[in-house]
Length: 199
Ligand SMILES: [Zn+2]
Image (cartoon, rainbow, N blue to C red):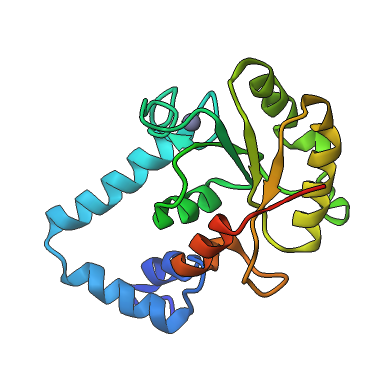
């Protein structure tokens, strides 16, 4: 790419996207050029709108445009089951399976001392506040089967012992070290229905 190429700037920005190399970036640039201008405007508008107005649900910390996310605001969801996930993308992966009808709590990460992420960086106080006020009868820990996920699950089970609520975790058919986010729906469904109690 040289500076005389009028697409250099666009290709450079597109190649910043995850998984997009220079060749894909160039292909995308030509794709955008082929679109009618209103379609490009729609694309940039929704991108900017989402980036500007998205916030965290006050209750579960899912992503939301409103104070309460669509799950918390849905009266059909079962208040007795709470599924603990690390990130909103894990919540979205579980929602795609349609297996879970309860509520979620998004921790905002996993404990990882190497990366400087300690328990106090996670939304554990908020979780404990919910356990005091909501009629929760089962906690389902749905964290990645990694060292960080296991460390966090163990920490949670210690911290939450006082509540005497049964804690289960997903039975993984996933390779160790993998991401919930990348699991196919069938595997996740099985992991959910075969969940086991954390002692
Ligand atoms: Zn919510």
